[in-house]
Length: 214
Ligand code: GAR
Image 1 (cartoon, helix red, strand yellow):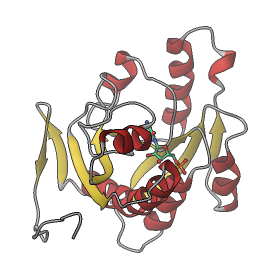
Image 2 (cartoon, helix red, strand yellow):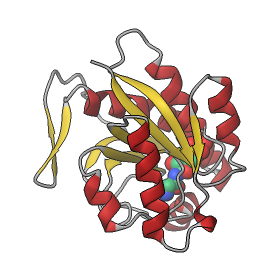
Image 3 (tube, protein in one colour):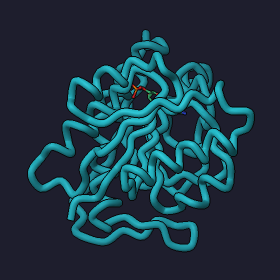
């Protein structure tokens, strides 16, 4: 059964594109039924339209409160029969009410190995701390920012000479692999949220360790 998914964006939407492409695969358990942006100028909107996906803009600046902004989002999500939400570079903090309504059905990609480096400027902070392994995380969204139960992570080495940009680019490649994989897992039920923890089922293929320097 194909689940109806909305991708929420605020910017260029490269993760959105990776989700759209993955969902076109014949056995993918979800379809991207809507791309919703809080910014009318988000580059990703054009890319979604080119891909033939329905788009909507709900400009938060036209709403007096977070609640009214989110009610407008809920109305559009309901109109499109949305069952799951992927936040993909969506840069608005969501209220507890919205998050609770979508509990277990809303996921986010974050550019660090959580619980390290919640919030913004993750690559700059990773370089400042001198970590040698960095990465990205897909997690269920909970009211506390970047604190939700972890569904999937990918790690990359930090190498001499790295800058914020080089690290961001190395990690983005992994985000594009990881996010569709995590969406598949929540849509086919092989990762689900129960009592604040992720319960995994199905076969497990991972083994080995990642070392940096290798
Ligand atoms: C991605 O790197 C994503 O992990 C990050 O924004 C970028 C969006 O890129 N998200 C956050 O920092 C959320 N706190 P994209 O628009 O090309 O997908």
